Length: 417
Image 1 (tube, helix red, strand yellow):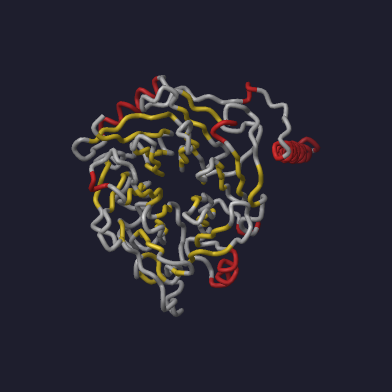
Image 2 (cartoon, helix red, strand yellow; image 1 turned 135 degrees about the vertical axis):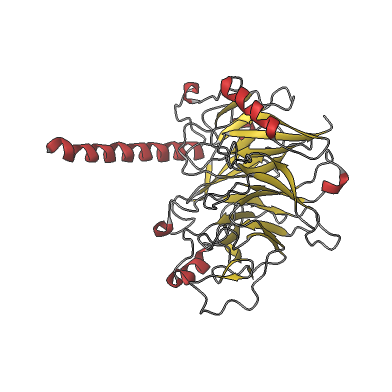
């Protein structure tokens, strides 16, 4: 009996000690002090083993437009959103677990030579969101915290890195709203040099009593703040679980994906690609479950009169995640300033859908053209996933990176190489 009582107590002591140690390390790094963590703390990921060989073989099944090709860029466990360093030295990759990975292609041959854990002297909690400022600050948005890492491209070779809190642990959202569901944050630095963060809400459809609280905190929307965390404000709301955003390279308008309500059938409601033309717009959730489809829970409640409908309705439950405007010069001209999006793939459709990369051209007036399939084949004809695309990033050479948290990989799509 005593052993059974002591075991959980001991576990709590060890957990507390680990948390205290991690916080102590954070304080030291903020003060530019060494934590004493040695280089043996790094975790390296093999890049040329049998697993990598099988991933390369799987890519033979991927279909692309003529002239394009795809290769395995790196094996990266649980790879989610990515941030390419402004100097082109290293790409940082977030996860929904506890690691951030640093991916380096040292000889610039289009395949990574090294993948290792970033900042092993620190602990992370669902560090999905990674983004860079133009002056080289890396931001990592965790479930309930945001940290910055000045000159991360140059400090990443050491287990200790310069670090600071932008939003302290427990202050991004109220602690009572921390959840196992919809916890992955995505961030970006806007043309106004402010930090934008998407915050999904934890419910399929939230109860009405949560509405007021969520409008105050930005849950179910996009918030923005100064890069030091000051002047936080809600930029857009009425979103359910947005997980991809980027700014139009010419107009500066913010575009976002949104994942819509489950349990309404295989083909309804649609997923959403949204265009945010000004601060303060509401995109209709929870009154609308996706597009103009009303939710059962809010059918007797009047929706906002100015609710903005999506510019593109996508396949229901295909899970549109990463989003990027293509600004490179490597692809044919028709792709310039168009929108690439990644569909993660469905989990609850009787007939699976998604697991592909889509392209949406834009019209001269800035509206969306007809969305088309760009890269597909991670969902086999018999309904088996061999990969699940999550996010997109652009390398300095104009090629496109695609992350895959199912296979634990990053792929590189190039043209004319």
